[in-house]
Image 1 (tube, rainbow, N blue to C red):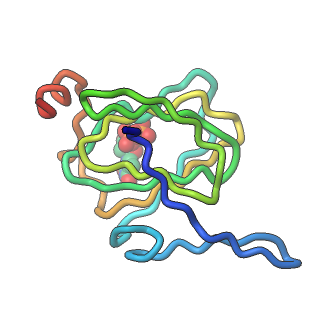
Image 2: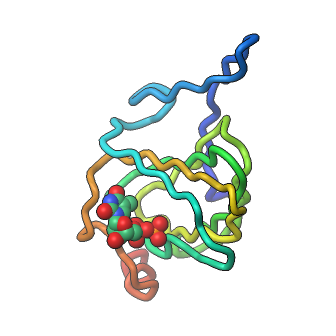
Image 3: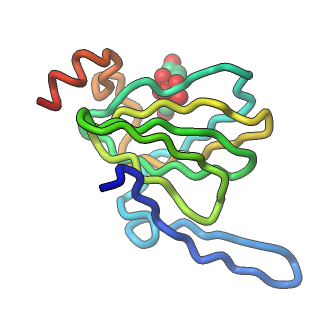
Length: 132
Ligand code: TYD
């Protein structure tokens, strides 16, 4: 079983170029309440390093590439994000770390709720205990 669950997006191409539309409760499988993006990440930086208790998110690599470590408390898996035609689901209680960002990497993240620090589990031992 893989921890990496992707949602494929339809890519519309014409003489103008390419376009992807993301719609809440359609190709994005939740109501979108927040959108943020991560860019300009310096070499050697690891971001994330947390899980969320209730938040569901989807991550799309718009340009460049990065790697993501996924950990559900039992299994760990590293994936490479290079494509803007699919989204990686980050379900609740999935520990994630993003690393090996290319200098041009832009990561778009869609979330089903507003920013709430109380929803974060930032301590790995607390995460493991919560999974048990
Ligand atoms: P954080 O979620 O810790 O980033 P990452 O997991 O990618 O390393 O957020 C970094 C900072 O930005 C932290 O101070 C909280 C703030 N922040 C917001 O204010 N709103 C948001 O929607 C997010 C995701 C972060």
